[in-house]
Image 1 (cartoon, helix red, strand yellow):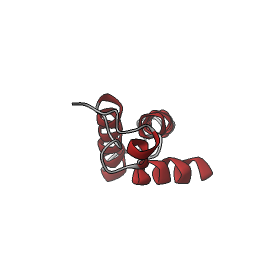
Image 2 (image 1 turned 30 degrees about the horizontal axis):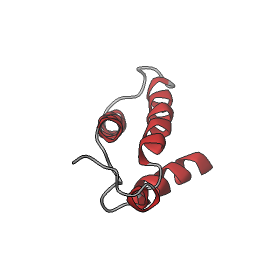
Image 3 (image 1 turned 30 degrees about the vertical axis):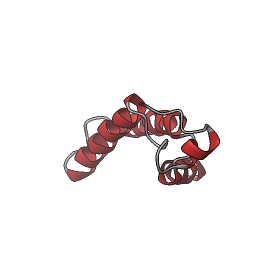
Image 4 (image 1 turned 60 degrees about the horizontal axis):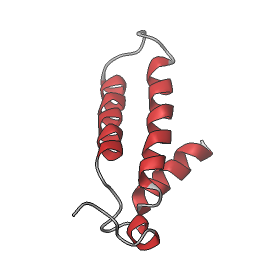
Length: 79
């Protein structure tokens, strides 16, 4: 539970965003595959939505404009 809170706080504040998204993606995929196909419905769709959003965070350049990553790493974002 502490890992979920830390990943969420890092994503919220834009601190180590890509690393946090990777850790969050790993945790969500484990939660998604853990119970098997017994569970379905809204909970499964919500996890799929979060997985897609974390993949977008990994592939884009988040946290560099309004996050702490921009302050720490000098705003070396996409130009």
